[in-house]
Image 1: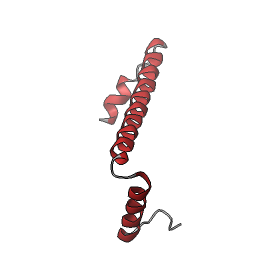
Image 2: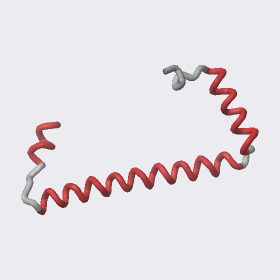
Image 3: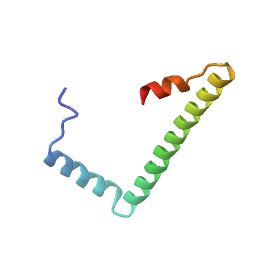
Amino acid sequence: MKLLFLGTWEIIIIVLVVLLLFGGKKIPELMKGLGKGVKSFKDGMNGVEDTDRDRNGANGIDDTKEEKKEE
């Protein structure tokens, strides 16, 4: 599957097409929105991990030993 392997020229052409479609002023806004989305996703994933830890602690499961072994 060679779809994911892009060369330098392909990347340059993609950047030029994006510039033509959205314009120079719109791209920073798009990147800002993308960054906020990624940050929100990471915060959500951290919330899930915290909830998992809280549940395990409430059930009497001590996972601190496992964390120490991984270090």
